[in-house]
Amino acid sequence: MDVITKEVKSNGQLIRIHGFQTGRLAIKQSAMHSKKTGVWPTLKSFRDKTFADWLPVWCWAIEHPEGVFLIDTGLSSVVNQKHYFRKIDIISRYYFEKQMKFDIAQADEIDQQLKKVKLDSKAVSKVILTHLHIDHVGGLPYFTNVPVLVNEREWQSKDGAFPGLFPDKFTPEIVTLSEQFQVFQKAHYITQRRDLLMVETTGHTTGHTSVILKVDEGLLFFAGDLAYTQSRLQQQQFSTTIKSHKQSIITCQKVKEMAQKEKVIFLPSHDHQSGNRLANLTSL
Image (cartoon, rainbow, N blue to C red; front, side, top):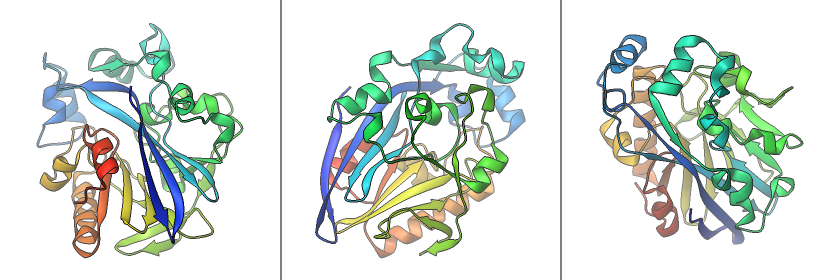
């Protein structure tokens, strides 16, 4: 899979950003396009025989003056192994094995993708997780000696997460989002320059986090699963499996409000156009 690389500047200093596709996934059509969320609509989608279109699984590496920061770690090819989900409850196991499809080879995993831009796991200063779902934590075994930042509320709630699938003795660096950034009441600055930060974007999960990089060209908004695509953000469409429909709408409105005041390049994890949007710095 091709890598998207874009050079930008922050306060005049060069920053290089890489977008990697670590495989792809698909969920049932009715789960993808449901107007209702929660357990019951998800269970009803089990009867659906049709899968929605494949979605990419993006990860992002930022070569910054203060280090290399990796946003999410993507899928792992072990999801295709017959007994991979045996450590989780039977209903969730059925969901992953029968209600989702995964397409990823070992060559698509994040460690191999980093090599394409002459990086490796040892070069990564910090991993930042938007949330703890399996398509965002799959590459964690490659970063056992790297600090992994997780929002405190995400770690406490673990909505839709399965600790049994985490690497052995996984102990992330728990971050309390105690500051503010524009419309977001909960933020945490990662760099000394205060140009890279986490903001809480509740909805998909209780502690879901997006990552913002402030550059001279605008705000790069690495959105995780806040909305699967930019069009779904604009239309406020969500899958059945999100934690809170109400909070997702509020979060989407905040992003759109911010985009009215300055240039925001919206980069969700499952949008086919995220790479092009980064390459062209196309804003909301």
